[in-house]
Amino acid sequence: MMNASKTIGSLVKADPRFDTLIAPDTELEVLANGYDWSEGPVWVPRDGGFLLWSDVPANTIYKWEPGHAAAAFMKPSGFTGVGEYSREPGSNGLTLDRQGRLIAAEHGDRRISRFDWTGGKRTVADNWQGKRFNSPNDVVVKSNGDIYFTDPIYGLPEGETDATREIDFSGVYRWSEKTAEVTLLTKDLSRPNGLAFSPDEKSLYVANSDPAKAIWMIYPVEADGTTSEDFSTQVRTALANLETSLRAAGAEWSTVLKINGYVADIEKLPELNEVYTSVVTVHGAPARTTVEVSRFRGRTAVEFDAVAYRRQS
Image (cartoon, rainbow, N blue to C red; front, side, top):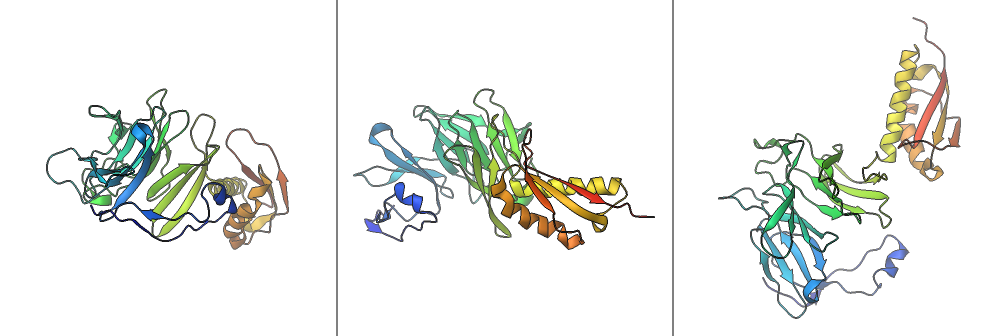
């Protein structure tokens, strides 16, 4: 591949604290170019330090190190079978585990793999409840060694309608280092893609790369490593539960006199208001009358109760 000693673009910061990580005048240097589709860069500190990244269509991991031109490091990187597989057969996301081993999300072999820098690769996980993954896309390792990854359908030969597909949704998963078990964290995103932890690992960020719903989700990470619903979803769930209770009592939204809200984090109030308005007021229910900050057990972060009259039949 052609290597170029040039710079490109500029850093765009959404928070001034970014300057404490990277100096504002830092240039973006092009180390190499001419690839089909570059993904999953990871800096490897061993052997003097070098950069690895995936070229997904080329089924290749490339390597760059200071003073040397970029070159192929591993081929095949994601599909080791016979013949052609798909337009996106290679590895995608790359990262390192606590022992410094290379962890890869592989489209073609439909797995999370580990490379110990000698010999061949080993499979970390390739299924959930006996069903093969679609095409693991991105991967991140928590400080305790657990591996979190996304599994959309991009690497399957026919995508969403592929005949070899065994899981009918795109999920976000966790592999436990202690038990080697795979846990489904959420299947609510249509195209889960990139993911990362907050610095304190209390939040998991997941990007949804569906043009129809291009969003970032934030999932609270529980002490056991699993995730709970994002706050907006919890608000919708709490309101749905309230509606169910109203109907069971012979009431409905239009018979509500007042609604009280209880929230665990007052900083979430703007988000609560947004969801509340979109769900409740369109049904003619009154504006919420009170909001109290309360402590909740477990994963619940919001609750509602209501006063309503029973509709006469």
